[in-house]
Length: 82
Image 1 (tube, rainbow, N blue to C red):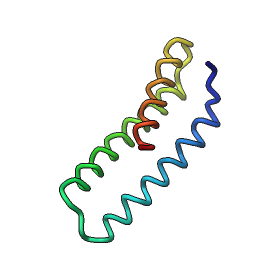
Image 2 (cartoon, rainbow, N blue to C red):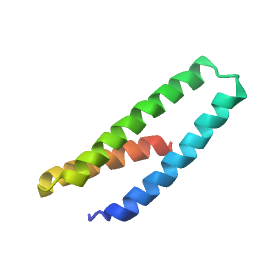
Image 3 (cartoon, rainbow, N blue to C red):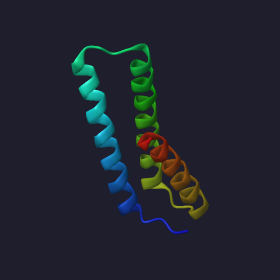
Image 4 (cartoon, one colour):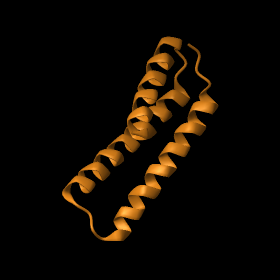
């Protein structure tokens, strides 16, 4: 199964922006529950992991390493999309 890096990055950026808008709306609403704060913290952790993986992917030259990073990125993106 091939990966189109630009297409994948574009889709994931859309997911990130949508999740960020949701997080911002909750923050401005002023009524965050314990569950919402936990969800927000998890999302922020996933966002940072995604950023780190994308940076590593940009520099990866070994095909096996790129494949591993692409799979990790897909897993995080799938989790963020939920």
